[in-house]
Image 1 (tube, rainbow, N blue to C red):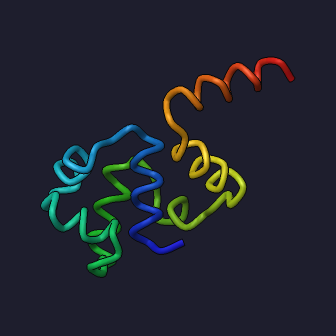
Image 2 (image 1 turned 30 degrees about the vertical axis):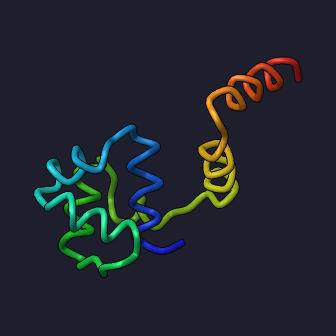
Length: 93
């Protein structure tokens, strides 16, 4: 997973908007958006700021749970109605 995509995944898991994370990290929302879209590289310094704002270490940033990420990405692509149906289904098993 690209660094920008990883930032976005963690940001969404934490419930942060782009504006909120950019403000907490002290960078522009435009820069964060471009990093997440992999249109712009992120410096180690900015990555440290993002991690600090997300409440994680650099080590935690690079640790991945591929299955959890895959599941999260699949669920985030569902419509609200599909999410409700999935939750109802999961309660039955």
